Amino acid sequence: MSIMHDLLRSKRKDKRKDKFKKQPYKDKDSVRADEFIKHCTSCKRCWEYDRRNKQGSLHLYDNFPTYGKQKETCPICLSK
Ligand SMILES: [Zn+2]
Image (cartoon, rainbow, N blue to C red; front, top):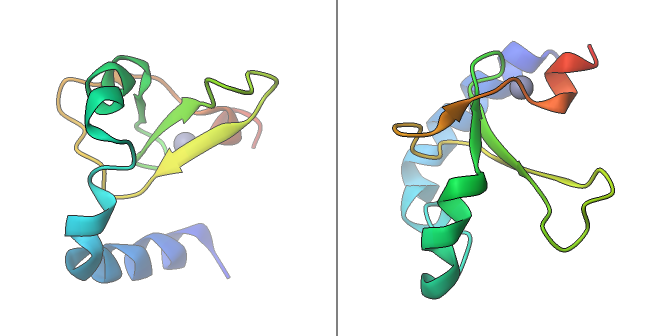
């Protein structure tokens, strides 16, 4: 299973899941969370380090709004 295949599939699914996926954090946290979320132009996903566990743990967000996000290649793409 290729990554492209995965992306295509998740894009279709995300249309329905959009409402639920837009806010991974609770209200108060979501404003601050945005500052830490970066947009990977390689896999087209937003990502951030887990703020509670900074020892390499990552969160990836499919179909996350990318405007205003810093563009930074995620560690997963970097390690390919
Ligand atoms: Zn990436």
